[in-house]
Length: 99
Image 1 (cartoon, rainbow, N blue to C red):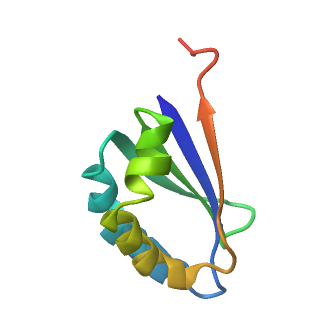
Image 2: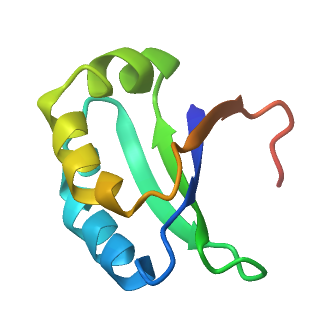
């Protein structure tokens, strides 16, 4: 499993609209090839910053199949207008499982 972490800062005052856009876009992720779930976290110390975490079966499910899809274009149309800057995206893989 690959965990995508997108660090997103939104424009001042756009927090409610951004959160609504992510909720509206959630089915796009759910239907995407290899998507195993997603969560949106708001940074407590910096309320304009969010971390979108999406679990993918493979890196290519995100970087190729989703990023080159119509669903990605719809996601960006919904959420993109609220971005203060381009998101930074990292991918991680578990190296030591808990439990």
